[in-house]
Structure formats: structure tokens, C-alpha cells
Image 1 (cartoon, rainbow, N blue to C red):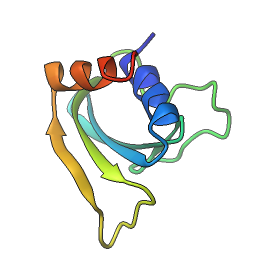
Image 2: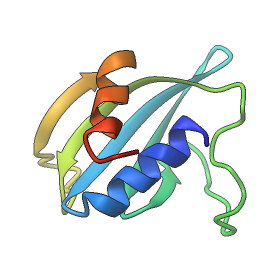
Image 3: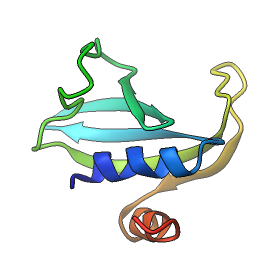
Image 4: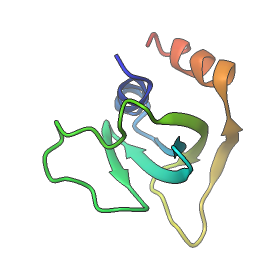
Amino acid sequence: MSLLARLERYTEKRRQEVLLVTAGIGDETEQIMIFRGFSSSLTKPTAFDPDIPILPETAVILTVDRLAAPYHPEAPQYIQKDLTGAAIVSLLQSVGI
């Protein structure tokens, strides 16, 4: 299971959280919002079909921010910012993913 799919499962279990994912695709940066198991791109159009991956397999997740739901772009409530590598894995393991 991809890291993005695991993060989607995390938000299914932690429905009071929104994840803001920053990923690198080549020399471009992509931002993805994940809420209640669904991902949506904030930097380009998102396909209507949820079976179409938001990120290509070559993408690298750079950071994850945890925010309180509901998300308010003008006043986001951060729980944790700039989680990377081991911190992301630990977060997923904390809910059994």
C-alpha cells in the first residue's frame, strides 16, 4: 500500500483531522489535502474517479501537516507541522496502519 493510501486510511480513523501533504514530483511541488479518506489536489485539477491516483508512483512525500477539522484556509488550526519520514511512520503506526 502506498504512503498516500496509508495516510488516507489514517484520516478514516481520525475523522477530526485533515492532512496537508507536500510532495515532490521531479522538480515540481504538489500539495494534497486528505480528509476522511479522500485526497484532493490543491495545486492542479483532481480526477473525479477516486481510483485514479493523485500522485504518480515517482512522487516523494516531503512533509505532512496535521490540522484540526473542519479546515479553514484563512485560519488553519495546526496540530503538528512538517512531519517527515520516521514521524509519519510513527503517526501511522499509532493507529495501526
